[in-house]
Length: 361
Image (tube, rainbow, N blue to C red):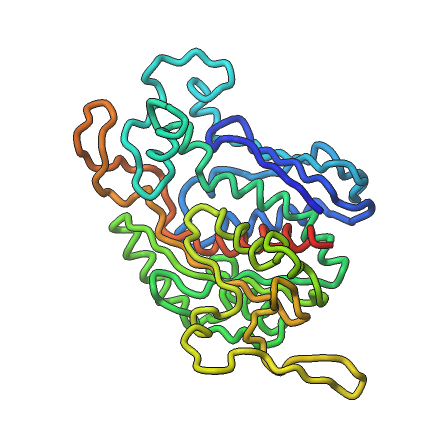
């Protein structure tokens, strides 16, 4: 089984991660890291930090001459913005008591609960670690897992389904190469195969940027080529749908996860399962994929379809909170935000699921 840990604060010196359990000899290229992180940073309506942070991955161990060597893989991404915060974020700094403090908890973030849990007098350290900035290193550490899956003939696609309630037309049953080609034609700004929805999304994002309002949305991730039987039915904690849901729901601002199209299945009357057929060669197959590739916690050989739902980011919500210095109600202070980050979420969801699937091998 693969195990990984991440560490680092949003404005600390760096983000780091260690991945343990990768087999020997998996081929990994430097551009594999560059491509996936470039996709995570891209997106129409992303914030300024995505343009200022280079997100260059430094491999510290576990990969030599472009191949895994069986030992733990350690990665680091330095935070260039640390230079602007190191006088109160350095490990051994001597900052003044009020320097760098965040005194107004942000509703929708972990500020207040974390501050109470750990006994802090301000929200800085919670905000630093609970930040979605952590997903940069989680995306990076997924690269060895993605390469392992690729060697086994497993490929994945992450795409945006809706932004701000405006939905794209997606045909999830279309051939993989057809979907990939359509997404490539649209580009990283929106990561969708439906080019007809782009102008509506663009207009909405432009309008919300003028008002400094964030947008939520939904996306779909599909994995192709999975064998039958990954996961298990024998214990609750080995069921793959549970493991995937936990990984997806651990991503900041993700508030829902579906396997397949669960919402639509809940409205059906009677049979909502995929009939089992057999071809002339004696191979089993299904004519539909209502289960989304999972049955009783195991892959069933069909494409694995995961849908996620993301709320608008809270940093520019401008709603009421409490000033910790005075105890009085006050409006939240503006904190850097994306107008939409659904495009990034599609890449991150694909990353955490890849790690979970690779672990099943």
